[in-house]
Image 1 (cartoon, rainbow, N blue to C red):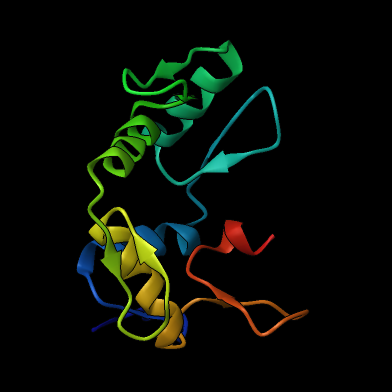
Image 2 (spheres, rainbow, N blue to C red):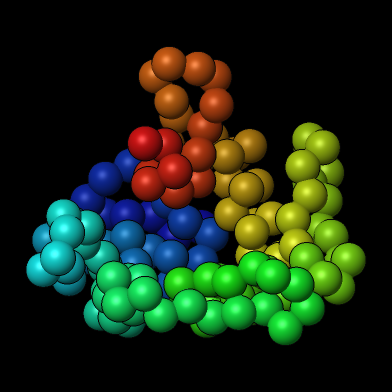
Length: 126
């Protein structure tokens, strides 16, 4: 594990720790059209495309997405490959989603103060 030297969090991957440290440094990229801010410039650029109304369509069904990465994630649903959690009944189309989910079982994440659910992404908690 990779512990954060500024708070009590620890991470399974060094890259996750590096991303987390940006929060402590106060580095963010803000959208000038709405109140959202992002840790990475790449994420802001993808977000700005949503304001432009640019969509990426699936050639297998009628779904469309505001980013290429969301379209790629969606394409896995057509493959029928699932990655099940060995602790609960949830399953995921992408391995990284399962790994992120497993953090909630380890007590790493963001607990809800209104129910017993814990989330691996702070934005999902809202």
